[in-house]
Amino acid sequence: MAPVRVIAVVAAHRPDAQLADRLALVTPQVAAIVVVDDGSGMAPPQADVEFVPLDTNRGIAAALNAGVVRARELGATHVLTLDQDTSLGLDYVARALSTFERATTTRIGAVVVDVINETASLPTWVSPEGIALAPEAIQSGMVVALDCIDDAGGFDERLFIDSVDREFCQRIRSRGWAVAIATGASIEHTIGRLEPLPDGGAYEWHEPFRQYYIVRNAVIVARRFRRLEHEWSRATLRRTLDESRKIVRNGPRRGKHALASIAGLVDGLFGRGGRIPRGLERLLR
Image (cartoon, helix red, strand yellow):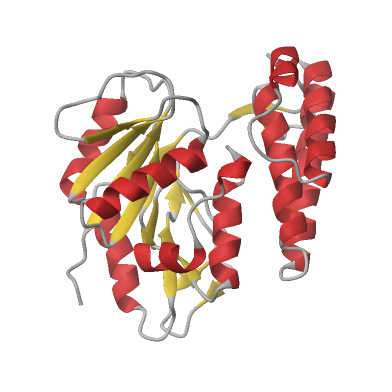
């Protein structure tokens, strides 16, 4: 068996000035880092990373797939996928690899983050070896075996952004791979913007054009896996539509969020993928 070689793949699109600091947390944990510029025209962030520029904005799924191709050329056995705004815990990769090593009977395809912004995840199942398992997880912080990608395929580029990780997790699970949680592995990661509700609760606010992708892709993925994961699909749709209602009722750009949600719902029901239509994107900006 070939020695384990983890290479990080970072999808970037107009990153902020802290990208170099975040990469510095990754460098000692992996064999190499591949940064993919998703069409923003950025310069290579630093000399010691592999840099893959895409000529147009093709979405996070396409950026990750391009990075995986380069990581494979560099001899990767596993890839660590990261967003540009993720800060990795100091022992993250070691915890992820330890989770792979503990699996004697469970076929683990991806190991995912446990603690996000100091909040620990709750496993849905536990494997025979005592490994925490989940039906899905965010993409940032996934350590994925290339054997799994070879079997199940890469990230779905028609989704562009949002639910890319959700679809990938469900697809690999449908082919017999498990999604495992690396207990104690932590990241700091920006997830939307929490806005307060009158009843003391909160909701996650995104720009209207992102709301289109959130609704559309949740509908596409829920419909795609409704036979295999009926209850999960229903819960995903219900949660997404509930969040949409909160944004439309309480947000500062209610009309545009309503338009984004309706358009996303319609396009999701018709299975329309790809980038948001240009005319709609202009209306929502």
